[in-house]
Each structure stands twice: as structure tokens, then as C-alpha cells.
Image 1: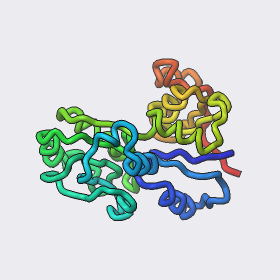
Image 2: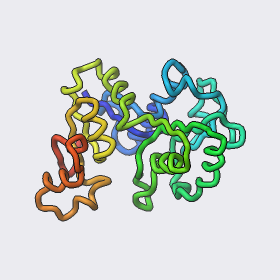
Image 3: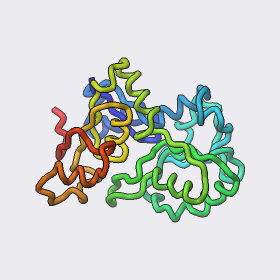
Image 4: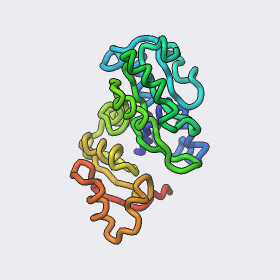
Length: 238
């Protein structure tokens, strides 16, 4: 079985359609779980921390439609002056510069608003190359003194959701394939899963020109929990 696990801050159905538009139809996998989907269910149920500690008005930072994000939730979108928490789900390509958000986030920190980050990725691919992702903005919020709760790889909740959707197999029977040592590999290892790193991804520049790929990956990972069980240049879907 193949499950697509994504740090997208948007809901799973949005990403099923997005993958189909990119050439991977729904028939080619057994489902998609996004960090945004885990957040949506958390905010609807409000039975676990941090969701049961958040208010009803959010300052929502996302890509695309805000209405789609809050549909079915007892949550309204507000501004930084009246919100009860910050919901960071995504960044538009033209607003990925962290300086763009600094003053607004500083106001949120001054009001002691907690931030819920639904995409811990630090970098993202854009038509203009690698740009800061929501995880980098969340790090800025923490650096300014704000409280941040993360949902998504490498944190446990999204891997637990993946196991449930796969029918609760033993974690050691699951292989996590991804291109990030910090998110895919570290998160998979912490969940007691096997891991395979795609080296022609966000670490491509750092790993370029190394004759001994295994040694280069181990040096970049620095510790066993960030070191994949296997590494390969690319994943070919046939």
C-alpha cells in the first residue's frame, strides 16, 4: 500500500487534486494525509492539546482560499489585533520573504498569541527556486518570543494518522521515502519506521559531487536519528 504523507497545510482532498494535476492520479495511491488535515480534525474535535487550548478566532496565514480551510469548523478568521491564535498553514510564493511578516508577527507575540504551524517545512520549491517555507516563519515567531505548536513531519501526530489509515501495521513494516533528513528521515525514525532518502531534492546541492554517497549522507545527517536506512537519487514511479 502507498500513502502520500505531506506537510501541506491544506486539507488532504486539495492535495489529491493537486497531485492529479501534476500527473499522479488518485488511482495510483491509497490516499493522502496532510498536516493540514490533521490540524482540521484536531480543531473540530478539540479533545487533545494544543487544539483544546485554542480560541475560536484565528489569524490565518495560508495559500489559496481561507474559506476552504475553516469550512466545517467553529473557527472564524480575524486579524492580528483581535485573533486568539495564529494558524500558519502556507505561504504564497510572492510573500515568502520573512521580513514581510516580521512586524505583524511581532504584534502577535506582544499579544501572547500561540501559533499553530501546520507546515513545519523550512524550505519549499517555487518557480524561483528554493524559498522559505512556513516552518521558517514559525521559527521566526519562536525567535521573537512566541509559542509555536507544530503539526506535520517530523512530529508524531501525522505518523500516527498515517498508521491508522494504513490499517495499523507494525511501524517497522513501513518505509518512509522523502527528500528531507530533518522531516522525512528524522520523523520516520522517531516513529520506528524504515527510511529512504531521495538525494536529488532539497539536499541536492549539499550532496552534489560526492563520490561516496553513503558517506556524504551520513556526514550531512550528523547523527543516527537523521541518517536514512537507504539513499537513492530519485524515485521512479512505474
